[in-house]
Image (tube, rainbow, N blue to C red; front, side):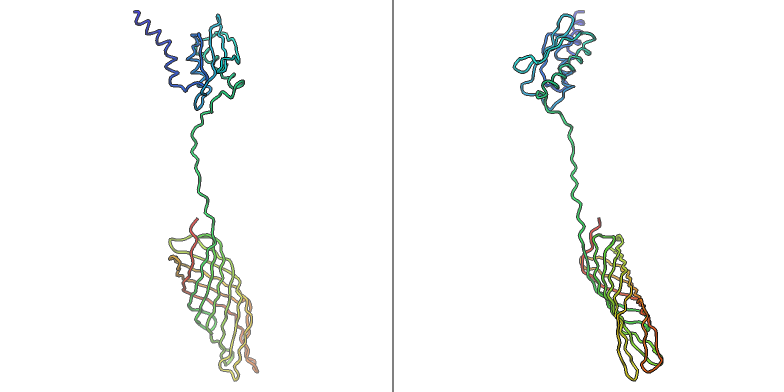
Length: 308
């Protein structure tokens, strides 16, 4: 029977000690002769209110002593000098008294001696550092192509030089293209004349998102042209030329292979104004509007921008 009583008493008095063993150490040493609440239980409650990385090397001392039916609480510095003292009514159970005493000690530590408090325990924070976004570099390609040009008077041979600039794998850019053809024969009355037109077109271009290794580019721009015509079977053959402004468009499909890129393109060119071909000394004349459709194959050297 006495063994059972002793076991029950041991559980009552040692339970606070066992519970406090799992809690972090308090930043203050708690002593005293009070049993309810005992110093161990008060220290455990203080540790939950003032968590830190570790207690200071010489922590202050708090005493919890019985004062008749009340509880006297005192806080002293490491040297023993009293910093604060208060008598609290001993109303409630041991847990409630321990909470009240722990709040009192915590308030003194926070307001009177904050320098005694340990560094706060901060949760680990994973810092994700994103690599800097790559800056878009302006890249370009230069190419040469050849093919045929269809216009008034039939089919002529054509050649083209181009320069394309883009800052991304898709989006807006700029293109410059120079195109020239061989002559085409047209009739002027009972006679024949040959005409040709050279032009340089400059304007914006758009490159679509890549489809595998294929790149589709379209451009539209102003064309500064130069049209020339010469007689072939006149009594006196003459040659004349003049400025011929217009517009030009191009659709090009390219396949990137390292620095070299083969391509196929369809282009159209339209002169803004008609040009009159006349025969001197007669009423024979012909109105000519330079409208051509070009089919070209070529190759460019350069580098396409990487997709973003």
